[in-house]
Image (tube, rainbow, N blue to C red; front, side, top):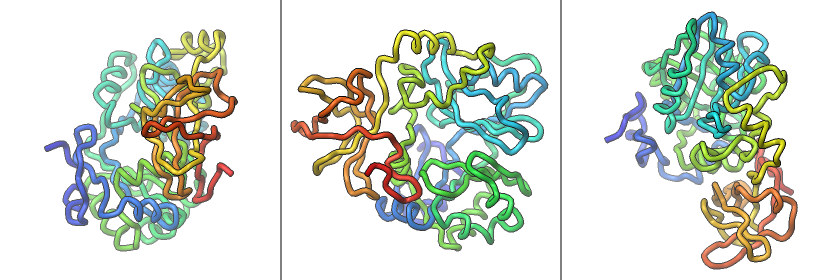
Length: 361
């Protein structure tokens, strides 16, 4: 038996198929992964993401410490209510984790991946500075409400916070009555994520499902995030690759040049020498499904491999992310080996789907 979120009994009662996910018992689906995927694209879906790790950072030196710890520059967050997606790197520029950092009135909040929890916490504690306090918030749950009707469905539960949250643009947040409400998500749809105490999370789940928000599991979350072109840690990036090799260059702030951060020197060298490989989007031009680790070929020579792949329910075709040699980017035709056959693929720039609509044609 793995770790359980506060909502475990709710999942079981809803008929979820529970699976192990990095040591957590989590819902894969509640009967139909496909229906849950479409619910998020067309209306609204509700995800329990309480396995994620929430860490609050406070202290007089917190901002300076974060500016040296993260590839993105938190000094660009102008006041409370702003958030930033970025990465935490090792000395060689490898991606230890991707995360979101939020600037609050009295400190900062990080949300990092469950699979990297112990590694991340050990890394941060080892490099912590005097005047900085780290506090893991294990007493909190996290829900994601996603879809074009997410805010409308959640309005009765949101109450007075509905107007403030609705006025927020992506990567902004509000705090209301113990609820941390952020305009973030992992689906490419409108919506929000909320961090709140366990008991309040149970009440929120009941209220939101009663309002017609459809419970959705890990299966739909994966196909949704892939359609949205969002990386999955441990597949699309990890310590063996840099952000420049993972379509994450935009999360790195090289300006101002005097800011030093862990991994900067390695990234500067890679930029100067040429990035050897890049993460790209692929669309299968024939019937079939792309899967992780399938080889990508150019003129019969392997030039890379799929890091993520699936059949896109929204597009009705195979899509994937692949890391290929930089020299092969922009060449034609590339193929992917699928069950012994070399099938043609088209390189596209993710996202494949945004707000329910195709972005590849």
